[in-house]
Length: 320
Ligand SMILES: Nc1ncnc2c1ncn2[C@@H]1O[C@H](COP(=O)(O)OP(=O)(O)OP(=O)(O)O)[C@@H](O)[C@H]1O
Ligand SMILES: [Mg+2]
Image 1: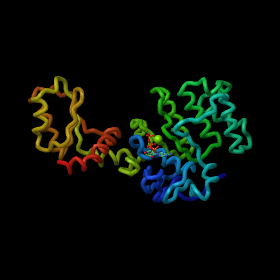
Image 2 (image 1 turned 45 degrees about the vertical axis):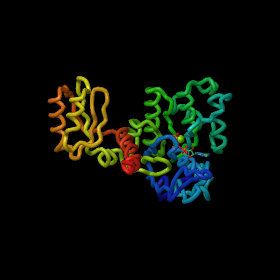
Image 3 (image 1 turned 120 degrees about the horizontal axis):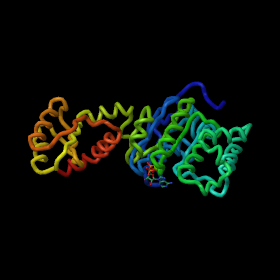
Image 4 (image 1 turned 180 degrees about the horizontal axis):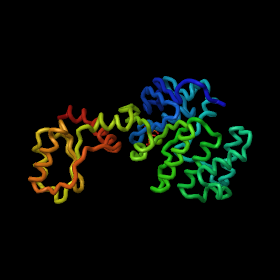
């Protein structure tokens, strides 16, 4: 009903936001297609929530523009609000009210034609149909998150803005939340989500962007980022202690760059993985390490850590 036929689900053009002197978000260009699941990653304070709040019309961009389904976040804020479902960083539910009344309040605010049906269907979706009379204040964190998701989808919005939807959830509850997000996408929703759970982002997101101090560092599919940033990081697991000969063995490999020691293993950046890996393994074995596995590193968590290490490196190099 509120959808426009053409254009991306979400678009930012040079959108930035300051709070007084502080630059929370540097001018950002971002285009998210319909049906996409897009993850915003980055350390605390990197501008993820700020980006979501601009798109949710909760704050205005200080510069540039933002649009949801081609509705401008400033000029067409009402249409944007009808098109989005928001799970804010803090659920901000009415703790004294029942689950039912919380949902009814939002359904009425959206002026839905059949409030009861919309509420029942949203609660059914999040698996709270049989607990609807319970007071929100008494619910566990996981159940509150479900209520927050139900509230976000009660008006069946085509675009979902989810700020750390699985934050604070136990592993099973987080997987359940992930499943619900996947179901919404299967039904046609577009999702922009912030998360610190990198494994979750890797499973769920078609593309991710990594921010730091309000600046976009990388954007792409998890696979693109892996090959761009980790092409040559090799992880070796071995039994035995990390003693001096073992350390020296690794440091003596011709193409070795940055080395990270972990429990029972080492992760090394190599100039050329194909050329240098056999040498690395041979030297480790010679030094007494009982090598049990060798693989090229490749998950989003590693991409993230690598990127964080890189973006602080120029300063260190200058100092050296
Ligand atoms: N209302 C505000 N007033 C002043 N500064 C703000 C405000 N909101 C955010 N900031 C600042 O903007 C920067 C970005 O904050 P933001 O909440 O977007 O980060 P985030 O990436 O969501 O972090 P987190 O992972 O901790 O949720 C931070 O330095 C933050 O302190
Ligand atoms: Mg945040």
